[in-house]
Length: 115
Image (tube, one colour):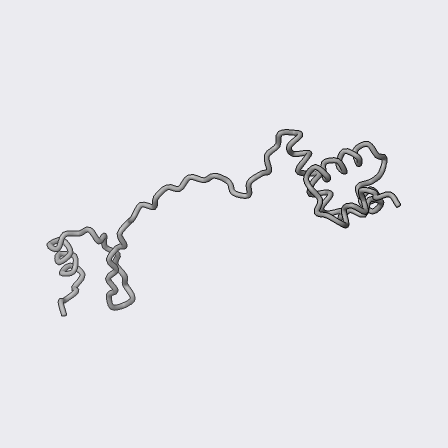
């Protein structure tokens, strides 16, 4: 009994050359990919995978990457302000880069006493 390529595929691992040959055979046939794979006893998803590789190579296409290039700008480190909570729910925000002298002056104006 003669050994057909379909029977051979069950006996050994298929190579890229085998898939290329099947791809070319399918292109010359009038069958759908599903019918071709069923007749040749090929795994449809594997056939489609190999076909897409060959088509990409033929068209010179490169598989798209999933990542897009971005540029990252470092964050400006802004110091947090000083928050003074006064009686009656009043809150005063002061810049943290105040000199000691100016900070004491603000506290005195606000009526804040030292502990």
